Amino acid sequence: MTAQNSPVSPITWKEDRVVLIDQNRLPQEYGVVEISHSQDMAEAIKTMIVRGAPAIGVAAAYGMYLGAREIETGDRTEFLAKLEQVGELLRSTRPTAVNLFWAISRMLKTAEKTSGSVEQIQKTLLEMAKTIQAEDLQTCKDIGDKGLEVLPATPEKLNLLTHCNAGALATAGYGTALGVIRSAWREGRLGRVFADETRPRLQGAKLTTWECVQEGIAVTLIADNMAAHCMKLGMIHAVIVGADRIAANGDAANKIGTYSLAIVAKAHNVPFFVAAPLSTIDFELSDGRQIPIEERDAVEMYQVGTTRICPEGVEFYNPAFDVTPAELISGIITEHGTVAPGELKQFQAKQLV
Image (cartoon, rainbow, N blue to C red; front, side, top):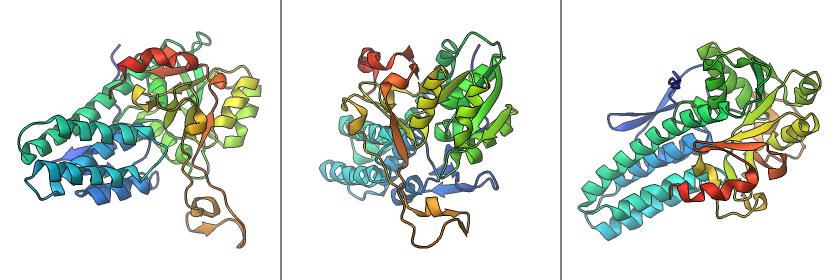
């Protein structure tokens, strides 16, 4: 059965600009931000107006085109040099999400390989950005369907736990982990989604639950520290999360709290899956120790909305991601199928470069 589109489209090309759903305003308010310049796109990525590794990659691709459009020269060599500077600007925004670097590299290679005038290169870059977006949407649908093949056979209606938001908002419009959940819901195999709050930014509470409500998918919100209790009671049949970067050995970086969730799943014999496109696998890194971990502003820790929740004088540590060791992962669900973490190399030749 063919996967249907999610009604949520976080990134839209409209005439001469990019329209982003402002994810910082959800769920209280649905609003969009219109982006016409590369600097504004870099800021949107950095401030998490757009977030989620695949969506960041798509946004960066459009950011590269916007930057190319801003370069005022007809000299090819000068143009390519300045385009590399645009790439550096966008690379500096989110260091952990490998899709960001993958998309920028693909756009730069497209520019280098395109013959003709600077104007022709600019036109080709826009088409490539659109292609990257379309490919990601299809990739996520494929991930969703491949994930169905490895979900537990019983019970018929599964309760699936997810962490953070790896749904339509984090991709071109269907989702990786939530894409598998969408496909299970479509096929009548989903009983309920359990969504971790995902502190400190609460992407699970704010975004995953919002997506589910939009589509009528049954969803229950739990605090991050409730997962073990729910598993002990037999309420969770499998865990499915996304990833921002996966090392060659299968170690996977995802939103902070994923590692502890994997440990809890292992202790309760609950399958733990990572769903991600091949573009998220960084074959240049041998293991997860080499994955750069972004540390974000302390305000995310000490303030909820406009309310400070701890006293002055407290120090803070706010890593945005942790790395789940490969041995805790039951399988990595990609658009080409599900593979054991230690067998990722078989997919290396299929990865777009």
